[in-house]
Length: 312
View 1 (tube, rainbow, N blue to C red):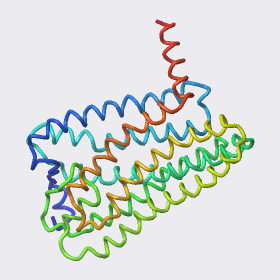
View 2 (tube, rainbow, N blue to C red):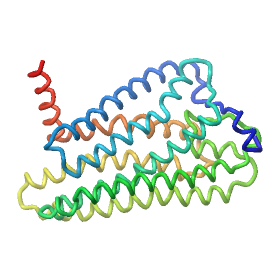
View 3 (cartoon, rainbow, N blue to C red):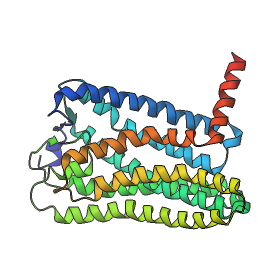
């Protein structure tokens, strides 16, 4: 696999849990169930955000962006996982692996930035409530969304390109469920210290820096919430922000563990299950977190179902 022309005809082997074949069908059922929940939950949030006029505010604009990301994020990896778990065939074409690498990184980095934007939206809503709709106007919302998607694309182009420049020396066995940077770097032979330094720098920028920004914004939010005199007002503000904080810690925690640990020294069994967590579990629980703790979303769902019942 030395030249690009030769690589295009090669394929990779995604090992997954092939060393425990008795568990493959169990994982297949669990991942399929999670994927179906992800599709239904995130699609519901997108539809509610579009169809219910009461949800036509910036918070739900960004929430529908997050749901769209989660749908694409899981679809870029889960169907291939299910295919490999179903039967003895574990291969993925070179083009399929590279596409998965670029798309997975693009969407993952976009979500990192989007969670920062959502924290900024909550900061304005809590700390500047009287000016919320003026500051978070539609033009700014679309601009921030574009920054998220384009910033994620830039990250993907940098990380994926540097990863593909590594000398793989004929190794094709990826000890993971999908083609992603940490697993691909384990295939490399020779000195990869420069590549690891560059990739770790980019990963730090797209994980640790956004997480720090989110935490700082929530320090200001907490201070503003404590100034609210009524207990009901404090609880409403706290409840609105708590869902976002839970999503932040789930996503950033698993991403930092999976991407910022040394690629050569980290435990690969732990690494593959961490990648399974943020590619399957997190997108599934995001809509549950936002809907179970959000009265406006639950109200919109009841109104939508009520209209369908009346129409029927």
